[in-house]
Length: 324
Ligand code: PBG
Image (cartoon, rainbow, N blue to C red; front, top):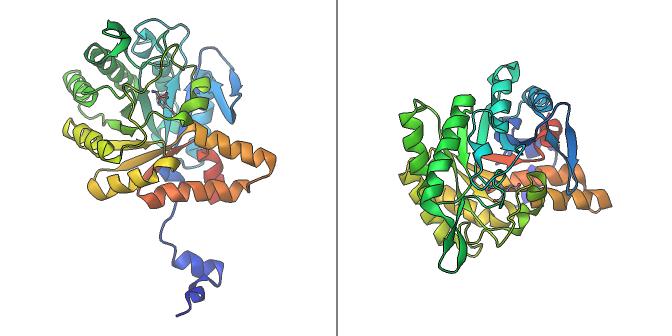
């Protein structure tokens, strides 16, 4: 047997290729900030910007032109408070962006996904309400659920096609589903970050979204990176509560978890190539240590081959251009 027979030319390799990536499989995250004409680059994420609503609409138009699947919206509010009111207010920053995008032609081609979480909006930077617990301050699960549900409803009403809870509180999918249904948003799907690990790879995001916890860490709600079986339980619970799709994250250090999820459930699966994955590749590109174009595609191919149907990636625009 000579395996090399089928590797002899570009066209032969294309014929036998098992995994493909299309721009429509890629979701591009945006960080929306107050102001007008603002386009502020994130220090640890070259090529990623905090964008005011007007700039974000322009970005959406470009994304639509490139054939991307959709956008994932995060917000940097004008002010932060203990409860993260900026997340659910009708005039909240993500709600403003959603309304503006809804009025642009781009939105017809893109799926607009709103990240549901409180950490960008709370003064303490945690993903839920802080209470005094037995051993000091802790994030209270059940009082947080109501705020997350309120956030999801207000995003759906502002024009989100999908809401994506990333907080990792127990029971949040059920709480959000119930609230959406009672508020007339029964057609809005939930993409739950079912399997989200407490990861060092979120570091640059916390600069981009100004969401670093002011004390402690997220290990009491996000999962321990050592646990694959626990990730499967999280997925089962979220689907039982009514999640329509699941998101796995980070991607590259957890490709085995994506594969296990793919073999276990039949819902659409997305994987998030997170900020740290992006930044370390960018750093290597800047040093000339890795070939940019080939590395971008290979990193996304790995995610698709592991079993994800779509990828959330800060490389979405770059990849779409490379695939064109
Ligand atoms: C909010 C949230 C985070 C990310 C997505 N949603 C940060 C965190 O959990 O600390 C990380 C995304 C990235 O690193 O690109 N909870």
